[in-house]
Amino acid sequence: MKRFLLFLPLLVAIVLGIVLFAGIGKDPTKLESALVGKPVPEFSLRDLHNPEATLDQSLLRGQVSLLNVWGTWCPACKDEHGDLMWLAEEKGVNIIGLNYKDNREDALVWLDRLGDPYRTVIYDPQGTLGFDLGVYGAPETFVIDADGVVRYRHVGVVNETVWEQTLLPVINDVQGNG
Amino acid sequence: MVRMVCLVLVLLLSGGAAADVADVYDFSDRAQEQRYQNLTAELRCPKCQNQNIADSNAPIAKDMRNVVYQMMKDGASNEEIVESLVGRFGEFIRYKPELDSRTFLLWATPAIAVLGGLLVVAGVVIRSRRAGMESQALSAEERSRVDEMLANEDRSS
Figure 1 (cartoon, rainbow over the protein chains, first blue to last red):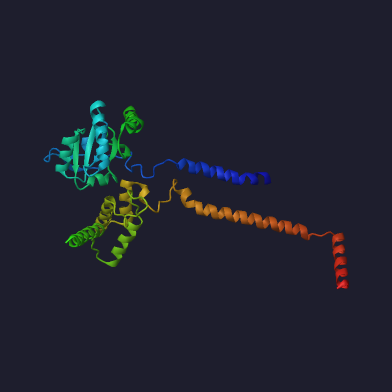
Figure 2: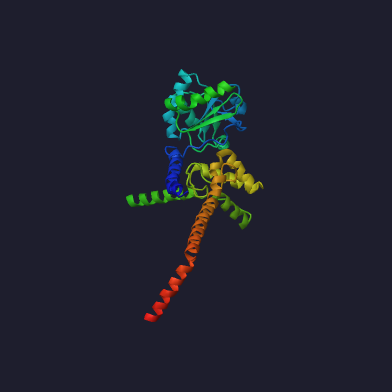
């Protein structure tokens, strides 16, 4: 008993060390979305390219899609744009854009100049759908399955590494289950 | 002239900054205003993570304050408001997480620490008392020696 008590501080230190070590390297600014496992919130917003057309949540059904939240005011969105073009053109990924808290003219100029990787772009100048999705900093990219259910949310830029190590496994998993 | 321009610029810029911070909301009475203050103080901003949404200047915090105000005006209860925001931004935004199986350890840690401390103190007290009892029990022989010593002491002084 006495012997055991002598080792108690060592034991406590080891357990504490393991617990604290597990937290090292985690980025606390990246939060898991509260919507994972839930359907995309209902919305009714205009199409960026076609102001007459109204889009709703059925846009995100039928096939797996990436929902990319962007705005021309967001410098990191410019960084990832080339990679989105690569995903759309080389990999044939179905990307839906959510133009978040932006204005239409700027957004159209941006897509004209940098290319348009999106199948459709939802125009959300007030940020209402963004708010319902829990967007707290663009760019954010959601993986939506064929039933319109949110499966994953990536905060920050999408690049080749993120695609290969994070998004592609999620998409494969989603397609495997569906 | 340059000075004038500077002055005007400073005035303009500071005016802009002040307007940025102040949201003007109308409340029917003091109690409502207090409720709004309490709610925004206990919700955490997901963007600037060490600030509540009352203090944060992040656009998302402003949107969240707006929703809190709108929902209050529509007669929602505090729980409904917090639930609706947690449903969008996650449990993270609560400064006071709910008590459930995941947060049980978090809430129970202070009680566990106090209990552990009490156990240690109790152990120390019991042990020292036991040790004290043992030393109290003098044998008859020891007692007679002590009496003798004391008697000698009395005599010598």
